[in-house]
Image (cartoon, rainbow, N blue to C red; front, top):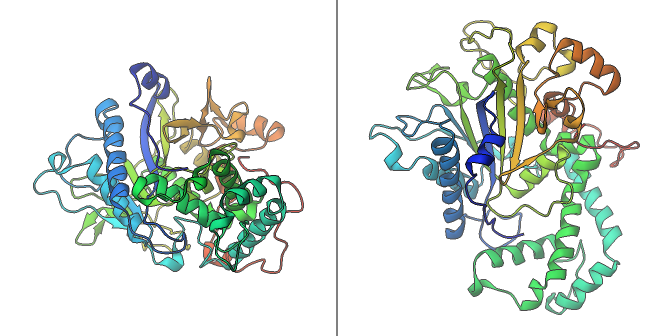
Length: 463
């Protein structure tokens, strides 16, 4: 893992396949990882010049795809109230969002009167844009347990022997043996190796750190330590990444309903008049979040779409795209003025007009009328420009015919609900994410503290 070397722009043939003419792109949500200064993963490192360069380039690539090639976003904006910008409270994440936004909308693509964009952050104790071990006690327990299992599995392995033969001579005297739980930890060594690779020869360690087999084994072990929990445990998924996926799904459902819960109520408006953009925008079309490599791998692993993948390179990104099948009729969804906005903590903004909105209501509890609202919509994940397939979406009735990477938001018809529920279960994108979306994340973090760390029965991801 080092800095991502992006592929070139999609060809016309690729675009035609990736964006079929019968599907209308409705909402895009981008999550990207950043390149930070050398040092421990737990330190609040700043975005480096190389990081600024690569995140700016990411924004430029997003502009080429969504503005130039697809015409989904406007060429010039007078405000950014159709764009949802979010960052963790770490400075490097905020800087990365700013750089990506400037790449997508440089000064030449903004009117002279365009105000600064709104970038949303949360207090560190409430942050769910990355796996928050520090502020989620139960998740910290689970993370330590899976890390210890990885140490028990690999510390005496032949692979670790190869690593030690190559780099143990550079370890400190009080911790001479490289191990998953050594000092520094194996994952810390991996961070340093990858950061020095990204920043050029002047920062390099001795050449033995860059041996191909050593790097391969370190990556394999580190990926298991940090991300195997998402693949195996529903509780791990719920506490580590479930609140974030719940936000992502809520914004998609809000986009379908026109309720303002697509993020509009958080970013749009002036003088206290929420729910309408300063340029008259009535919905969010695009979102960018500056997060971390552990966020991206956590999302993909929790959805069963990270098999045989290496640790995410710096400036990796995931695009979560919502499409409407224009050939399928859907229930009328008149825009709902100032609908109540429920946050990841379960609180709600007072509404000026009571409205019935789905928000985070689980798919299994939707009424026929609510299910009908969400008919004809598909969700697709692209990871570093590669479409990813969620295992539960491969099943009949749960993807666009002919392309399993387009997952149905909900099962496509009520008759399909009955048939698929009997044969395959109700899994479609929303139902899969609902299974590990916590009702109130902060409460879930202090529950089950005396429970076992590992599930007693298999809980595979992506179903």
